[in-house]
Image 1: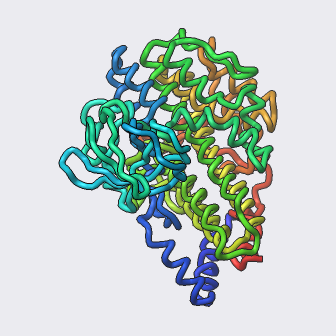
Image 2 (image 1 turned 30 degrees about the vertical axis):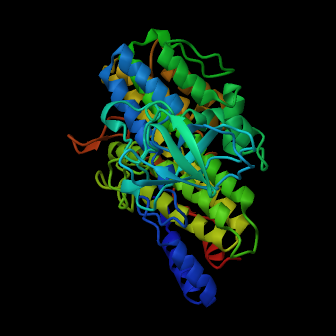
Image 3 (image 1 turned 45 degrees about the vertical axis):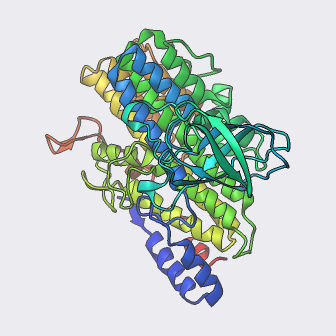
Length: 511
């Protein structure tokens, strides 16, 4: 058997000891940064409540998809494209032009419909003479009440205008100057952060980013032949059309709403959000200043954003399984593969993957704060490796369901969605393995051989930095055993020592 030695708990203890002996001023600064509400047990160093709320868009999309009417699907697509819960802003029209240039972030105050003050800031720098102005609503450190203007493309009870600027003609104070404005609250409260944007912005933020090329993004861009592959996948499924990728194409006209629902909701969370989570960690590393303890607030904030996009707001502070994004997926798949609990052997509770990732997130946060940029990069690389685990588990699970349990359109679509979220990484390791997985799980596959899919994945675990124990085996809880032929595989070497992070002792000491 593999002897697995966990060094993370040792490194966290050393981290705490090193902080305890740090300069009093530095320690005070770090302690203040840890005063924000936790994100699924992670302690952010900055306010990210508004970022975490992106999962509320995912929830709203899923609710509308589940209704399975043409109107509800139009609603779902508009929420995908326009958002409703994150980075809320008002688009107002001034009765007279701005009297001077106004910088991004300038304080703005107005009143809501009840006459109570509403605080905001300029969304971007706006030139003198402009009459159309974007004002971003202020957010709080408390997740449950982070913002009180949530409109965008939301419908029904999800709409909240209690904290929006008052409708019609009113006054607003922009940087000390009072203006009269007009706008319609129901249609001119919009959102600057959307799940669609998580894909459509990748060309600028990753393909042309300051640290390009970024390895994980390049796997996907090269495989699919485009930077916005996730957006194309989701919109093609909404429209019942087909993709036009270099590899991994899908013709969604072969599915009805049952199958396309799975393609869309898994695509938004496991393709759009997945890569943008990686993007935020990369952004943190791009901004990291080596050896500087007090000048890495921006990288820490970007890192915190990445954790938010992984977890979302609905997981709460304790990470209980109740969310809609990647944290929730990891917990769900661990039940199917008997990889729950700190040791990865349970079939209930939090996944070992989430225990491991929360340790890595905390370690990366500290490395950035202490200016240990090279070690933070190693931590990011390990995070990316681990984040592929649920995609592999999902692909294997649905291959088995389709092949052996008479899975129908829903199960076939789920298999296709999970495969699409990991195929580019497999292809970079072994194109033949990727072809086998794609041909068995693609939309419209003539047949599915679950053993061929399982073997293809297992053939590249070492190149992906994963082990058989990381993935586990497909567990039949009713029978208290693995499904036939679906137990965990055995790694090439059965008596090697596997550590969870490289040089963790050195990392913890900041060397």
